Length: 203
Image 1: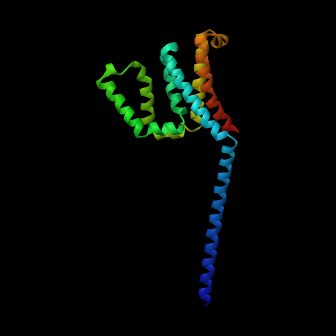
Image 2 (image 1 turned 30 degrees about the horizontal axis):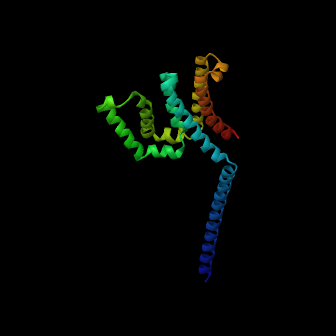
Image 3 (image 1 turned 60 degrees about the vertical axis):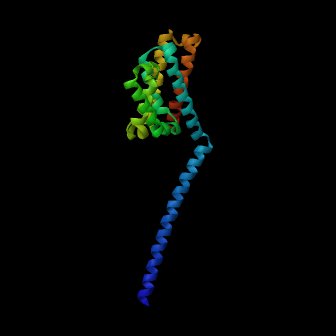
């Protein structure tokens, strides 16, 4: 009887320890859920997604303007890594999967075997999709979603703004010239997302 009572008491202690452990894990999960709910409820999560879409579309807009206004390969090439780093996760995952692989395959085949049917205007979009598909996981997830990615985006945006103001003849002219104004607005828009990310990081 004494041995049976000891085993029963031991089992009860083990059960209590397991229950306490589960309760602690449950408490941690509830705290995380509450923190995420606060972030989403306050609009921070929505704001980040919104600014990602805004920055990506602004960068694509600037990429299109390059063929009509800028005509500077250096600026165009900088927009490609910017779009890679700021593209919203839902679109990034789409191009990272089979859909993007098929587009990349078709683009490579056209470029290799039918170069006359592959216009120069598709060089940069093709490079972007290729970058989205073949980039290593460290760049695609760790760098892109981290502080380093936001800093790179901000550096690119500041550099483009500085070069654009220099080409326009100064800060004032970049906002007053008809052609320069559209580029200036686009560059300012691509600055919003990295600034927002950095503000959230240091809050």
